[in-house]
Length: 293
Image 1 (cartoon, rainbow, N blue to C red):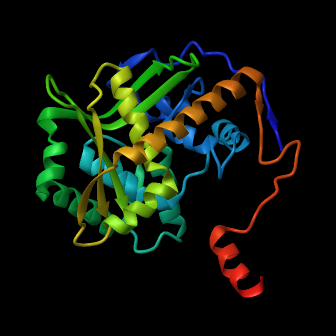
Image 2 (cartoon, rainbow, N blue to C red):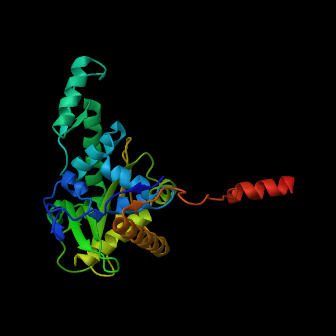
Image 3 (cartoon, rainbow, N blue to C red):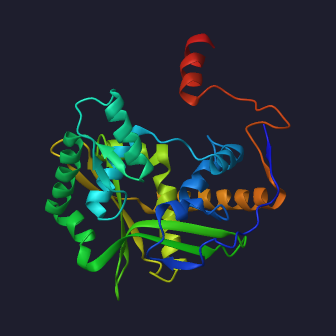
């Protein structure tokens, strides 16, 4: 399946180039003239440009699973949707459903009391973690900062939304990015690194900082990963050089794809003109050739 559209033109309301300190999350994500880190990852396998374009044009419905992460972001970073208590043991009654719907209509996050207690405890655990607390020190930074810039090789608009941007005057820029997880251990996050393309995010954010003249070649992004169950353990993780270089190369492929699709208006799916011929996964081939060949 191929999605074909007229090449989009830059809307008058598209955010200006540079840093925006007060751009809403909705306004940031509404800009279809620019490419974000998450968008770049959606353009590449195992996804495809057609899926990217569809999700851009058809915002996905709310998922309850995102509420805890978004609420924790708000409590930890100090900016985000209002947390609204819907004080019922279960939400399957008409009254509870009405309050949940009203909370979402206001742009808030409806939560039960134990969920509010949980994100409060998560924020407290962050403040007690020496490194995480230092990286997110309110006196030396601000949350939810957006940036827009032009990609030199293609001329397309790129964008970034920093969870936290330090107000640094001199020295090396270190950018923290906060993530919640069921398991914050090194082994678990290494798997997430591959599953979610966090090496691409790292490279994207570091390039953004340089393009926006916030930091130099030694800029580094660090992930603050926190578990969502007590004792709400925290792990601060950096991505090594080779993984970041792979991420940078994948980002470049995605940027080129976005530029080509934008110019042509054609957003290809998985196999539009020729079939894809597949081998067995390497592990399965090795297993079966030993047994049957």
